[in-house]
Image (spheres, rainbow over the protein chains, first blue to last red):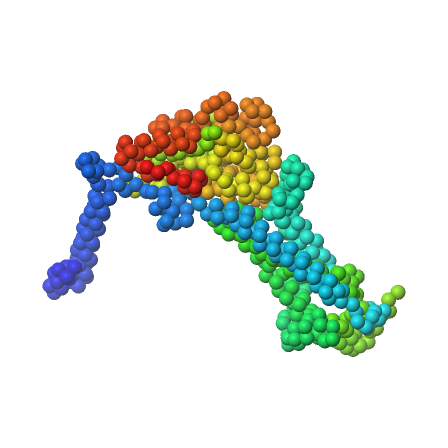
Amino acid sequence: MSGVTATGDGKPNGLKTAVATRFARAWLVVGAVMFLAIAGAGSTAAEQFDPDGAPNPDASSVHEQTLLRQAPRIEGRIDIPDVKAGVLIQPEGREWDYFHEVTLRQVGAVVILGMIAVLALGYFVLGRMRISAGRSGWKVHRFSAFERFSHWLTAVSFVILGLTGLNITFGNILLLPVIGPEAFSDLSQAAKYAHNFTSFAFVIGLVLIVVMWIKDNVPRKVDIDWIKQGGGFIRSKHAPAGRFNAGEKMVFWLALAGGAAVAVSGYLLLFPFYATDIAEMQAAQIVHAVIAVLFVALILGHIYIGTLGMEGAFEAMGTGEVDLNWAKEHHDVWLRDQLTEKDRAGQATTRPAE
Amino acid sequence: MARMKFLCDADRCIDCNACVTACKNENEVPWGINRRRVVTINDGKPGERSVSMACMHCTDAPCAAVCPVKCIFPTDDGIVLHSKDLCIGCGYCFYACPFGAPQYPGVGNFGSRGKMDKCTYCAGGGGSEAPGSAEEFRKYGSNRFGEGKLPMCAEMCSTKSLLAGDGEVIAEIYKERVLKRGYGSGAWGWMTAYHEDVAV
C-alpha cells in the first residue's frame, strides 16, 4: 500500500487524477490479495490427501455434531416451496418435550395443589372472615352493572380457558383413563376450539376491566398501612383501604401482566409461522403454560376470598351492593368518600334492605 | 424383534429427490405435505452434503410423549404410528419433533390445522382400520410393511444412500461402507433420534 501512495504523491498536477489512480491501484492490490486468499483457502480445504495419495472427499464435509455445536439447529437449502422444511434437525424438541412432560406437570401440580392446600389451611385455621359488627341492613352501591358484566365476562372465559388449558397438560393422566380415548379425543377437540375462541372474550373482558379500574388501582399511601395492619387477616387490627385494598390491587396488576403475557404468547401460537418459527413457538408455549398455571393459582386465591373466605364480599360482584358494615370494615376510605360525595349531591346515601 | 430405522448416507445422496417423489406417489400424499424431504447443507460450498429426512421413528419419540390425546405410539417394530381418528390437530407434536416430520393439511390459524400427517414407514396407520384396507390407504397411505416390504423411499433410492430396515443391519451396512471407502459424514439424526451414533 505504501508503494501506491508514493507513486500517487509524485504527480504534481491533477489532484483528481492522482486520487483516482491511487484508488484504482489500491483496489488492484486488494483484489489480488483476496484472490490469493480464496485460492489458498480452497486448495487447503478441498485437496487433502489420504496416506495412499488418493484425494479424501470427506476432508471438508460438514459434520452433524460440529454443526450442532455451532448452532442449536441445522438448516439448509430445500427444493420444495415450503421453506420452513429447510430446517433439518432441531434437537431442542427433546428439551421442550421434557419441559412439557416433566417440568410443567410438576410445577403445575405443585403450584395449583399448593394453592388449594394453603387456602384450605387458611379456611380451617382462620375460618370465614365475618362482618364483625354484623349486617347493618343498609346497602351501599359498589359495582355498576357494566362493571359486573366486564368482571363476569373475564371470569367465565378465564374458567373455560383454565379448564380447557389444564386438559391439554393433565387430561391424558386424569381424564383419559376414566372416559376412554374416543370420548377424550372428542372432548379435547371441542376444548381446543373453546380455548382458541374464548380467548377473544377474555381479552375483551380484561381490556374493559383495566380501562375501568386502573385509576382506582394505582398504589397509594393507604396501601402501606393496609399491609402493616396485616391486610385484614388479623382480627384485632383494622386495615384501611380505598375502593380497592392493596391485596385487590395486587390481583389487578398481576392479572393485567399475566393476562397480557398469556394473550401475546397464545396469539403467537394461534397463528403459527406468522411471527415465529418452531423454536419460538416452543418458547411461547413455555411462557404461556408457566404463566397460566401461576395465573390459575392466583385466581383460585381470588375466588376463595370473594366467596368462601369472606362474608359479604360476593354481593359486590353479585348484586353490586354491599352491606354498610362490610364496607366500613374493608373499604373505609372509599366509603367515606362515597358518603360525602352523595351528601354533597343531596341524595340518599344508603337504603335499607328489603 | 427388529427395530426399524432410517439411515441416510449423506456421502451418497445426490439430491435427486426420488425418495420424495416415491413417497408422494406411493402414499398419495396430499398437496402441501411432504412426508420426506431432501435438505442440502452448505449448498454450493466445499463439503456440501444432502440429507434425506422424514420421520425418524425415534426412540422415546417426543411427539408421542407430548401428544395430549396420546394418539401417537410406537409399534413392536419401533415404527411410530398415529391415529387420525383421535388426533385433535393441536400442533404439539410439531413443536416437539426434532426433524419437522409432523405436518398438517391446514395452515393452522385458530387451530384449524386438521389431522396430523407424517411418514408411516409405509406401514399403514395407527387407527382402527383393517391393515391394507382402502380406508387405511385413504387416511395414511400404503401398508407395504404389512406385505413384508420396506418403505418405498429407501427401496427407490438410486444411489442406495437412504437405507431402511432393522437398525443393527443398516448400521452394519453403513459401517462397512465407511471402512471400505475411508470416510463418512455420519448417520445424520441418529444421536437425536435414537440416543446412539453409528460407531465406526
